[in-house]
Length: 246
Image (cartoon, rainbow, N blue to C red; front, top):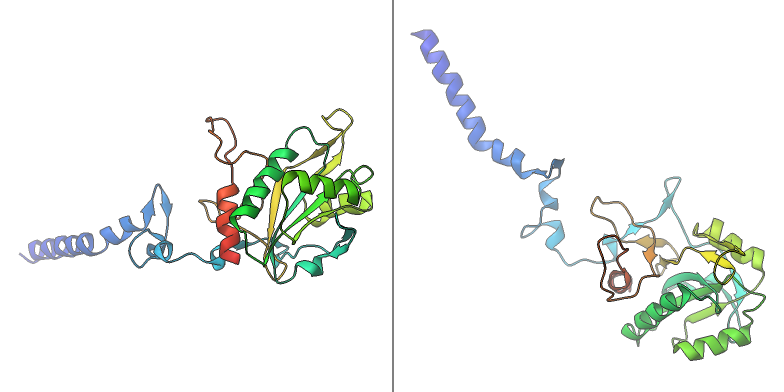
């Protein structure tokens, strides 16, 4: 009889374990990935709260938050602009050139849309660096800005020493820019946008796995119909994230 009672006791314990703990374990498993309950999309959870700039990742290098590198160039008005002029502002960084026949027109049309949607935001700006400074003088950049409808006073199209600009792109922001005689227009660059917060830190949205996307695709037309094998535009999420940081 003692063994019978023992088996009944063990069965009872297993039953209680199943009732109490199994649902909690299942709750923490989604598509084979273990997650904490507070990451689930339920009332009172982290994802249901109002999102803010704190939701955006800091870009880190060697475990340290990465700041936008120092720069000093001349803009379309002939004014000397440095990264210090952007402190206290949220701004987007791009590398382009005015005679670009491929992605640059799309990039800057997208940024004009960003500018227009954030009209009146005094603490929003854009830092555009030409990778063809020999051709893109302040006068050329001023004409380009007028033709594109660039009106934000914090949008500086900058030119200067080519080596310094390429070092800024390839080392400072770690986004590619270079000369390529075989490329259309004679230059190549990534077409990505970097996002910088008011304190000068590089920020970005996180992907579905919680990792920073680092850069935003600026070379895809906003509201474009996307095929399965094409890149998706990221201008809408860029606007959302700028607003968070503002």
